[in-house]
Image 1 (cartoon, rainbow, N blue to C red):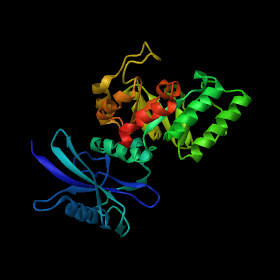
Image 2: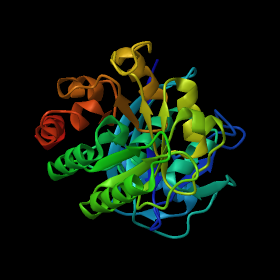
Image 3: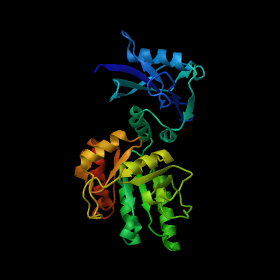
Image 4: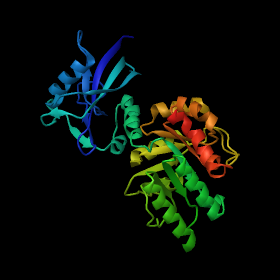
Length: 329
């Protein structure tokens, strides 16, 4: 089967919205949404084709497109080699010159629509750019330690470079504990970390970047009004999280873990298969030691999440640095 080269633009406006267009009747996959672009003609370079196609389709003149990804995808009728470009600079007003509908959407809004399958991993890649860097998440459960020890462990991890925290409260804490946890959230944010609350409703007014939901909360119809992520365990959960507007998803357990002895581990092959099809950046959770981080990343994880490996380590700062070495070099 011949591979057809295609140039595709991820057009982003000043507000961070992306332009997608609806494939019209008369073309393959009508009624599906896609990032706009088209075939590379013989003798053309992909960038030249991109500029031409976006003028023909949208009436904009593109300048300085940035190469983003090259992806081969096999549809039933053909294989395409998609050259994706980030497009942040253009002149003209984008509109459907061929009568096609176009929309400006934030990246997390796109999975709610029926999109071409090849676009899924690109949406995930764009969403991954907004993840905390490095993408190491500590699930901080204050029930696992005495409160003073919990605070010391968390502060040590932040001092060692941790920049992502999910504060997990399975029950509503008493007032003194809540005051300490609220102060820790503020402290983490002040150090440049992102803080997501995994807390039962009603959600407290603690300083935070967003909310983290369990699959049960998502199933119950909880719809945060700010950025959120979801803990998932299978492809159905990932699809629901994406269509509800999640920014990321934990997928677990990647490896066997003592905290959930009855859970069947996904293992890297199954994880990789779901990562390929997901429009969300997936964060590997479950049995992820520092030594297993490369395996998780090779399976398509955009980051990893840990709990006891840092929180209950004899030296939380050293444990954090051991995980971070895979991003910090």
